[in-house]
Picture 1: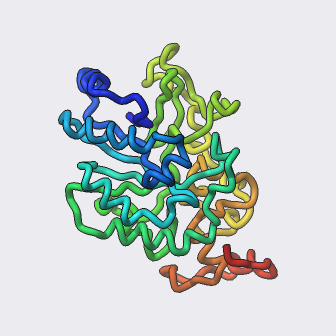
Picture 2: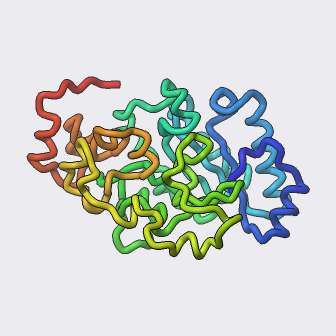
Length: 291
């Protein structure tokens, strides 16, 4: 369960335990200045209190952090802070221009920031610490030298295998709507294409097993790709990256992709193999400027 922690109390903790939850995750988007500017004034103190209440009450507490222009330089220090408060797991994801963030595009990272940010996150993942796991969001990385450190160490192929929304992942909104991933837009944003059903009307098994469900991922065709993604050597596996990010960015390819930015800016030293002629040719003649 994911909460912003604004009203979380010991009573809520006991109800969560009674319902069978083994953990709850809270949104922490930087330290007080960055978090409060990103969320609301006073929200940082309340969410940290919620984490402390959860840990003291005997339930595991996780944290989700959305990386944006305000907090992009504070991840190493934030890791230490979260560990000091007993957090067991930390999910890091990129801010994407969907939902409320679509109204605050000035807070989005410049795409070229991936060239230093992704290697930094990979270094944090490499720090041995069994009691504190880092879970890298599905809109970070893709097909560079840092990739193996970002993905689970126990998988047979330690690199990005495409968005798992509707394939291995599912999200349930508080009103009962079922989506492939909670990050995908829904009725709150005036968008219904990703809602597969509602638990008030059907069982989760029926929704999951319905023919044609989650077709954007289960029945994918490369012809849907655009921009650089259409010529990328990894297009059949990657399928344009995170479904949420691809939907939000629209035509032109996934500019938040690490591989995209490394090829665009000629940073072949960050790649395991040099790009293809078709990939470099895509950017030929384009003006490339630093962020």
